[in-house]
Image (cartoon, rainbow, N blue to C red; front, side, top):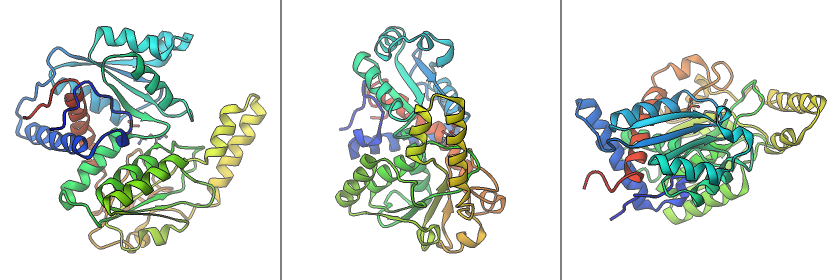
Length: 344
Ligand SMILES: CC(=O)N[C@@H](CCCN)C(=O)O
Ligand SMILES: NC(=O)OP(=O)(O)O
């Protein structure tokens, strides 16, 4: 029987199918108890440290409220006001926090090739679970909530259901790749037909594409990449359009040293995005998907760019139940990694 006690949750691909099922079943149990008003104090007197290098609304509050509901305490840490900003290493920081609490949750998503590495280095050195609240590679607490939401809508057998994970226009510089990468990696585990759509140049990182291909072939699902948002939406059960950045331009920006270089890079990103302003999820595109299709987004969404108000506020949108599921999945991940299996 699967048991995640003491384990890290850094990428969904680190877990077996049984382990993912344990997290989903625990989520359902915790959610039902929450709605019945029953206590779920599975982690009394435990502390989870929440270390944020970047901003958050949903994730921080899901983990803080979630830990209260589990009977423990979530301690918020802004990386900028810790000694990390003076160069203290992930190994040292991890050892110290592990000696004082029971789990360390980290968001470190905006710097390519750093967030995932930071979490892996801390995990090597610390003997409490490390939970990834979004890194440069994956956003596994988001995608688990997305999977939970789909299971609630379509039943636990998602085999053959089509999800369109599409790039969408945003007037901002560059959003992380972790959400689309996490989605194609996880949804292909469940036999889903995953279509990734993006304009030329907006490629995801190779190892996540490889993982999606392998997962699809192992589960009997499908994984394809197209450069046409309409084609991706055709006959979809779920549409998940969101913006992300151009990897090479994001990397160039990280390496830029002068104000001029940064300015030029930013301009290049904005003008590249602007070529694809018509990549918006609107009522016309929703009609290409199945009548029963749902619109999903991790939020925050760029209204008027990624999606029209009529779609995100319309009858096919499930973004608010999806966001609520961040709470119940966060509790399940903490409860399953910070103690033995909670419900038999
Ligand atoms: C603006 C920004 O960094 N957005 C992030 C955070 C939202 C997490 N789902 C993103 O779109 O990936
Ligand atoms: N979806 C998500 O991760 O939201 P936050 O950035 O607000 O945490």
